Image 1 (cartoon, rainbow, N blue to C red):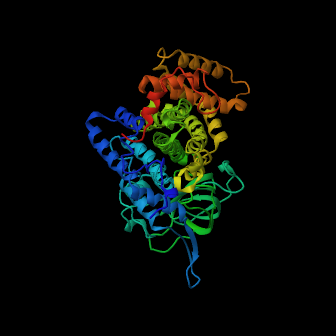
Image 2 (image 1 turned 30 degrees about the horizontal axis):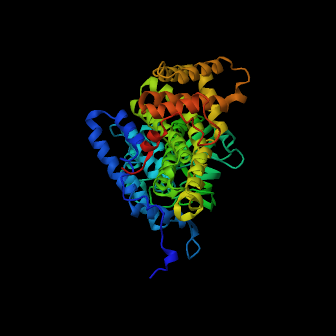
Image 3 (image 1 turned 120 degrees about the horizontal axis):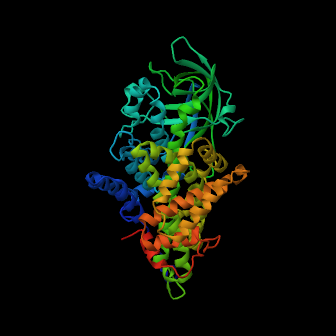
Length: 544
């Protein structure tokens, strides 16, 4: 029998056993908004099924197990033969299988494919962000391979399959495959044009032999990889299969796995190519152009992944404070804590709303929407991923000392939070990409201004922010030094315009006051007291 001093009181119950999709009002509303009425019941049912899985104690346990048992590199077998394999905990394979079967690699051929997948990505990130990396790379490989219809015909049906077929075998003998990517080299980093990996043509047309070293190779257990290497005509994109058609292993020498701050369930490695067989994708010398759509897709996933992490952090904080009592009442009812939670909820909803709007643009595919994506994706990637770390840290603080303990799950969110800002081009890369879009593709700015213009006249603070943005855009002297400021303003104005149009009035009012109107501080919990914070907080509550 427990001693009286060990009776547990005033602790919240676990946040499990609920539908993570249905209780995320901002996400559910965005899906409704961007899905055709005839598809809506199907999409809602699909996402609610995944939401119940995400909210289950079983899936949450798998996520914890995968994080606590990181992958191990096995370079040789017991006899000394080189095998270059990565061993994962069984929980990793269960998670990856669920992710594939939920359609996280199947967006390209389904109605409303990008919106339903984007929502699923936000949900699944909350269980384990690590397994979302190979899911993202596999999804993003499709547009790059479509530059070569022959390659696409072979690989795309397997890339978009909803069957997780683990084990290294020739692609022709698999029901589904996963892809990784290898662009970064130690001497170049984000400057991929400095890559030194060389590609020597072989006798068969379109085939090459690669020699070089990749400093970061994402998801090295995958069936195939898109990599960049220097061919005769310059930097070129190549497909590197792990297993060749005759069943032999390609030369893919894993040197080590990275010991990362977060994302520990996922493997990231250094790989050596030494006479590695590869197939060219696209034209020689056009590697960046070939792979650019893959990069855009993974950058959007960085936005969605950060939105998922923020939502989980806010959900945990709101849940804890709803059940925890202090100073004579529930924490969530205390004016100052309500201010903090509402402020966090605003950041989370703005990120989700923006991410789903960009996914809807991918589904549309029209010229206007493609132009919007060209400027909005790097701006969103810059800003939303930057906001993820302060949100998760503040949310952990809402749990007090409990939030600093591993069992709460908050430290895992905090460790994961900077990742999406670093991967697929860090902050300066995104800000400079925004400048390139402004300078080289003026139609992208026109598309952006038309999008935010749809909310003009609805909120004076938004109108003022649009006017100030136009003033900034009119003065391009020394603009590179202001690139971060400009990317931030572009993202905030776009978020504000979407919330004014689609969010409840209390949410839009609070966002515009604090993010666009200057009536907010540098830290969370500094919203003006005149706002309807109770309504904002109620919308963020993770249980019905």
